[in-house]
Image 1 (cartoon, rainbow, N blue to C red):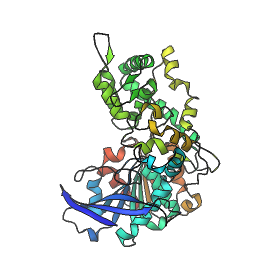
Image 2: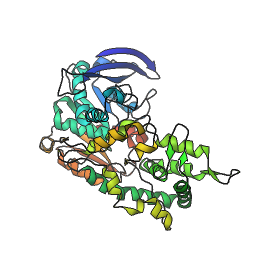
Image 3: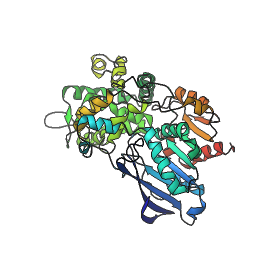
Image 4: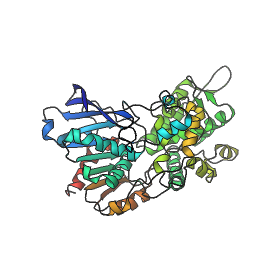
Length: 436
């Protein structure tokens, strides 16, 4: 462990840490990679007197959020904890993985082998590798948002001795579901979110059809090489899983066209807004390993599960929709082969993605027997109709983890930890401390 810098923001003292861990924990004497973590302590508190809280961001593929001062849930966490905001391997400042760095790994097959080491099992082993140097060997509390919650359940399955408590928000995974089963449950949820959006903003039904019809005839080429196809436009539905996402989508759609000498055209403002929302340049691992996070059967590849399952839901076929009078359905939280042709951040990695989708030999991530005997205090926020993580699966998993206490709420969407901030974290802490 190396302490790089220490500095201040309003109400906080920040310290940058760098850690060296094995790339492949099964080969501890082999290649090593660097991890980055940002420690946050409230001004005026003695850090040595505080227990540690490890924050694992959602994703996969996102670095830890860059807070300023005591924003969001940090306000509550800093009352009791010394917080480590960890950039999980391959994200943020932790030996990043992207189209620029992956060619250093060699052929697409070698790149796919490399990417297989970026799932929850490796992330938890990273956490256990760095914990003793930070805590002196004491267990710490983990706070996992979304995919970070998947990692927390893996932690409970493989190294519960490292945990004082686990707090999970929108991230209780199915312990057994295949990628196909995950998406068979997902598309009906996504459809419900679409219908709720159109009930709120009925004028958007015609707007979305008009944009889709335009793109079906003339896909838009954006600066930087991004191509906005009708399928890419549909994937803006990823917004519908967030608390204010429906409103963001409405504002994006309302001024999509402008008059030009050649007739109505999609506006630069609309195209730039769509590009910013759809680009994977800042988080390519999300697209590359998204289906792999569900792979647990050694004999079964994920094989572009979302694309195959989507074929069983013709209402999401934009061209069939445009031939009739149904509202266009947006997608979201699904990755498809076409992502690797329309996004310049992903296009060089298409063959690598195909090989990863065809990969077998995946190992189970969760240990139901160990979870059934769990002794770590665990609390989880489960959102009533979460678009990203199936609520029924989450509750089934909650029942399978001994002692886990749930807070089921329809007050927030999947991003409740961001939107609800201190209140969400306070509720979970009360649950693990038996104060609720």
